[in-house]
Image 1 (cartoon, one colour):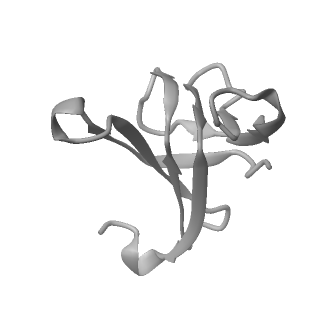
Image 2 (cartoon, rainbow, N blue to C red):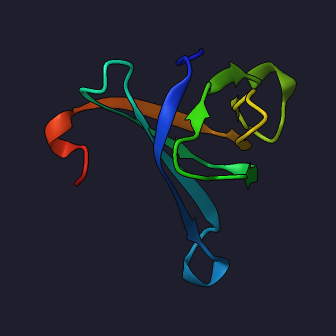
Length: 108
């Protein structure tokens, strides 16, 4: 799955350490949609091997999500990455969801 090159609005990383339960990591990524009328919100759960570099205002992300379920990587089902060189984002995850939100919720 490929979303095209969209402006990054936010990257949110949520972590639960072992002291508070089962360790886990969640990534929430918001991208400005193509016609600038809203945002695309992506939530990735069961994140492993997160790498993120060179985040700055105005970056674009050509996010790609590839199934790796056949690779038997400890139950990981997807590999997520940005092929652009000016912003590095890559990780494996168990699952993800995508939602489109209207412009009214853009700055919420």
